[in-house]
Length: 212
Image (cartoon, rainbow, N blue to C red; front, side):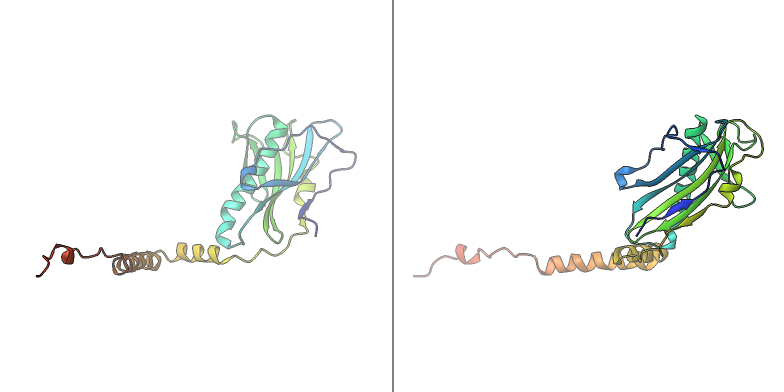
C-alpha cells in the first residue's frame, strides 16, 4: 500500500525545482523522508513545498500526539527556512494554519503559511506538511490557497500499541500504584533472594575432636 502523502497542487505555470534542500532529520531514530516536493513561481520569489517523514513506532497512544505535532511544526519551519535562507518561526494562526515568520522579526508580516498532518501505516507515524513561502514580502502569496486546500492521502488508522507501550502509558497515568507496586516487588525480590541464598557448609564436624 502506498505511504501517506500530501496532495497540494501548485499554481499553474509553477515548475518543480531541486534547489530547495531537505531539512536534516533524526535518521538515527529510523526517520526518513518518504515524499518531498518543491515548486517555484515563474518569478522565482515564491515556493510551495510538501513532504512527509516516516518514523517507526511501537504502536500509538494519544499521549504521543503533542510531541509528534510539535515535531511536525518544526519540520514545516525548517523546510521554510531552506527557502528563505534564515531561521523561520512557525506558529498557529487564527484559521488553524501556521503563520511563518522570520525568527528575527516575530512581529513582522508572515513570510508564508503552512499546514501540517499526522498519518500512519502499519508500523510508522508520518509527520507531513505543506507550506507556501515567499521571499518578496507581502500579506498574500499565490500559493496560500493551495496550502489551505492541501489534504493528506493514503493514511491508515494508528497502529495498536504493544504490551510494553500500554504498560508504560498506564504507569504514566497511575504513578502512585506504580510506585507502590514497584516497591512491593523490590521487597518481594529481596526476601526471595534471602530465602534462596546458597548457605555455607558447617565446619563444626571438622573441628570436633575424634573419639577413641
